[in-house]
Length: 115
Image (cartoon, rainbow, N blue to C red; front, side, top):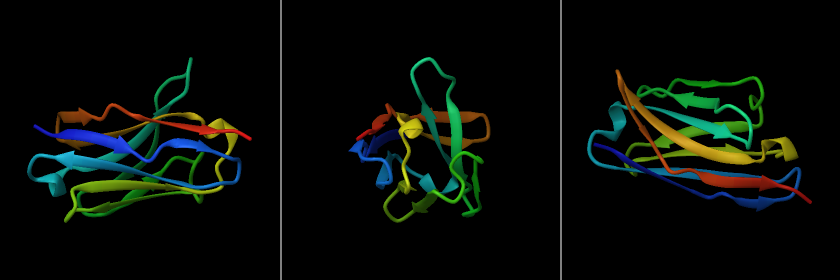
């Protein structure tokens, strides 16, 4: 069993930056592939970035070159560094841990980009 807790969201002006964190409890964090998703009101949940247990990363076209996913297995934490934020980045942001058919989700953290 893994519990995920996201933090770091908030209100930021367009062009600003935020770093989201997702802390995992439980053991064997390093074996999980970790992902960040977001969901805006009235829209489907969107996969933004992924990092495998081996550290390979992938990004959606909508955030590539602006967002960076990373993980620190010594702290059981995955991060999402978000730069050059736009109003359309406003959404709830969720982390996901996956290992085979097993999936865990956090409760999400809200990011609002507005002047």
